[in-house]
Image 1: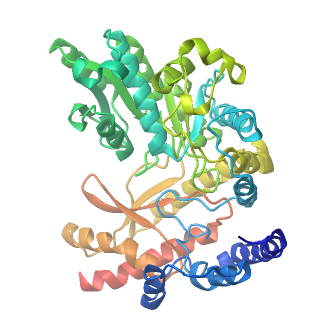
Image 2: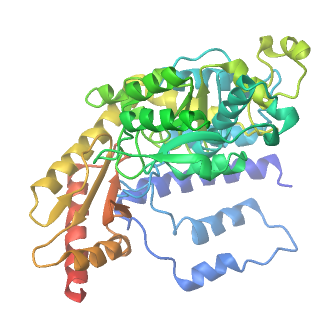
Image 3: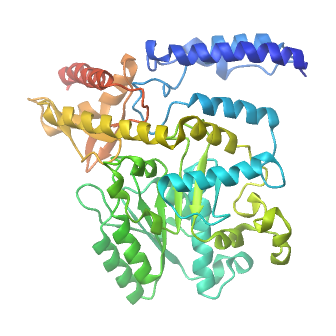
Length: 477
């Protein structure tokens, strides 16, 4: 084990190394494929027999790891939904690792700090937050599992079944409703919770990918008439493909009418509510029974950090707690341990990096950065729409722009082939990074803007790269 003096020296060196790394990102390629020898060097690392000094470890990090990033720290990284790390969050993660507690519960700083930052997150997106009504998770996938477990248990209780004691065999199939744009984590949660993906019914959307409230109401009524048991609607506050925000108010009306649990996936998009231009799209978000968020996306909190918020804290606690009810009020001011509200028992100290990220920016800074990303996305959408060789495939509602390369002279089959290959071709050029998807059967690119240091010039470079890579592919089509 390293001595404290060794750690002090290495920590100073690490700070300089990482500061230089972050400062140098804009000047380097966004991403390049790893050389075969570098890749094999990491894949084939032997288990060391003897330890090495911390300074040597840092040297290996500098030589073998930092030169090969995913690219998401760069201002021209527009791929998936991966943010650059907030420097304050990096410092918070460093300090949290030095303390290394389990945030399951007890009377220590991480537990109380998590209560505050969960409340902060709820306040940022305008979600009602009862004490105990949320916790930090590894990400929105885990947040969704936690939320749907609570929804399942509420539905079971309404049927007179204690599903924790009796299991799913005592229940009729529970029907949930999603759209074709619903994130796959909802299906994964349904499968893991024993609900079965077959019981998730896909409801029609409009041309822009919004779940249709009228079609939902009609499907629920039909299922009830046939003796089925609806219990859940999963809505999106910013889909991954296009950033579309469902009509949350209308969906909340349907759920209230039929007594269904409304879960909103706001992992990426819910923070878009902070943009004054986009805020109206999120009306009704506060009416959900549960909301999944990912501070490690738009806020830039270092991975991993998700959050689940619920309206009914006792429902959530009753879903997971193994502490007898008569003992619950004896701990943590009646709120109990975080491990009573979710799946994890040993829980990492996630809250310090959230606190540091939000505290460093303040509400004003977060609003500024979110609004800038949305404005840049609208600008990119306008540039695409004005171009003769590009096609905007969906309205820009948050900070995702879905488009395709469409030069004159290519038929639909050739356009399909070219656009299917185009994202990787752009990535490999190293000047910008964009990823692909399929929208209404069309191969597309989708640029996600999460980095407030991105400039309009970066947008033009992205489109230039698309054109140059696309022209090369078109010659082969």
